Image 1 (cartoon, rainbow, N blue to C red):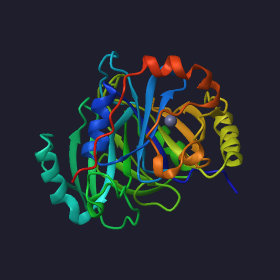
Image 2 (cartoon, rainbow, N blue to C red):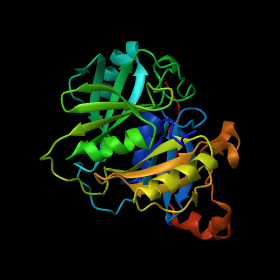
Image 3 (cartoon, rainbow, N blue to C red):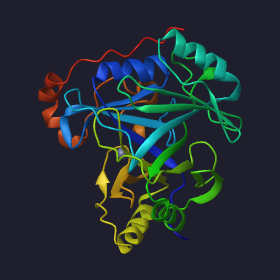
Image 4 (spheres, rainbow, N blue to C red):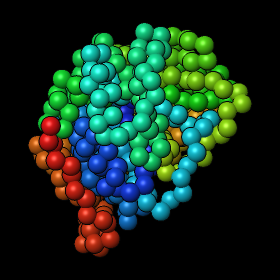
Length: 316
Ligand code: ZN
């Protein structure tokens, strides 16, 4: 069997202040804070993970909050939109919710047969809610959003490319995606079971300004593989194509490899296992600061250096 990815695993972006990030993603969007840990490559800063109740791949949005970092610029060579899936009949609920919280949004637009609500997070990161008809996943039931309206995970991500050909070739020939649509300058690809959470849009703009990394931009997108064996096989294949791909890194909740696609977006391939219940009970995800074993000896120093965070109450 050819090694392939089966969809989106997670998206990681750069935020400013961690509490404001938490208030927005948990308090307003109603995602569950599924892990509060540190950036393993920069342990003096947080790494916050949000998702559905269990942190299933395809629902995981993560942030490096770097309050002192400069603002980035969204542009070519980046993810220019991260889109979440909501029930088709929840569009009214969400427009009201955004109004209630003073979040400006664009007039809902129609893209093929989907209705899209576009807005930004407090750091300027572009987000969308897509009213999706055939998404059977369940969102976080115990958050501030009524369960019947909860975000169910990602719908798709959008990559902006000057020249789409090398990127789409990589998605198709190596990563296991197949083209499922085309609408003007937008090509749609789906992996695995397809549909919401397994979809990547490649948007082409030959003269778009290049993006720059910073607060309010996406750091990388991770695609999922079922196990380490497939990850290693895929690593061989990607490396054989001439990509500079990292060795397998232990991210505690998954194993990862990273490489940059031809257009400049940082891609990660992450394993589904072991998942977020590896170091705390599912019923208590996100409640306390978790550290990987190799950082545990530094816990006291790290806890003293990190700002205290308050998880927003789930009032409805
Ligand atoms: Zn990642």
